[in-house]
Image (cartoon, rainbow, N blue to C red; front, side, top):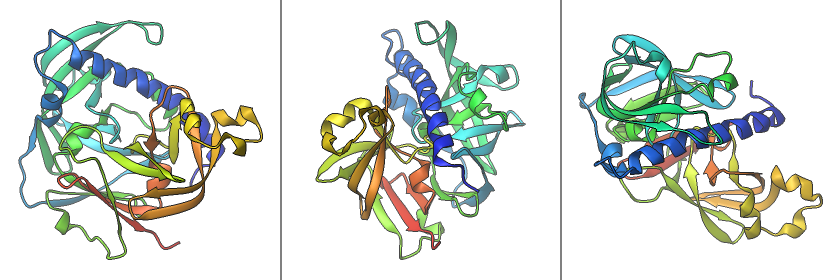
Length: 307
């Protein structure tokens, strides 16, 4: 059973603010002058040993977030599945339990977060089922900011975009399973699927051209977001403000006549406006589809479920 929209919005606002703090630490670390490798090199590092594979794993869907089990140093952990997180993250609480190579360490401090050490590390192996992701980068950091939002599950890390791009994925929300393969033709993709193309590059976040009414904007493909369509409060400058009858509500929801994403057209939708967030498309949208991610071609196949 799915949660009510009200409960999701409250939790989503808190989670997004905390996620921003974590992402800023990634950007700060990878852009520091004393670190020789750039974000692209970090994102593209790593590989999968297996060839010609297809595996299926279960996932937990809690608060419209996806959690999967991973294996690191022969120990099992629960990780958040997040296409909107540029580099995988590992909670510092398990740092003594796993093997890794330290690449860089800095100390972060500021008004929004207490002083903490953040480490860029190389993981020799992360296994998901029997698929081994070798020599991928991750951020070893304090994830206590996001843990309180998921009291029913212990979170030890985040599977980020850099690891996901080493394979192709099919998320079956209806059956609560994820299929992983090196070839998309191993997936069952129905002819009724609709195509959504992401920005054409082979690393980093995926951006989707999203037409709102008559204008097109770039939204992040973000399975770490529990929302449907989310944007910064400043996005209201692009909208017809006459449609808002109560200015106080502008910080929460804004009515949209039409949204077009690739071949998909939706009518009478709403856009959530929040302070300090990017433009995102999250699980509340994708959960209505069988979602296939082809990272090589930067294409999403969306097959609507027959309700």
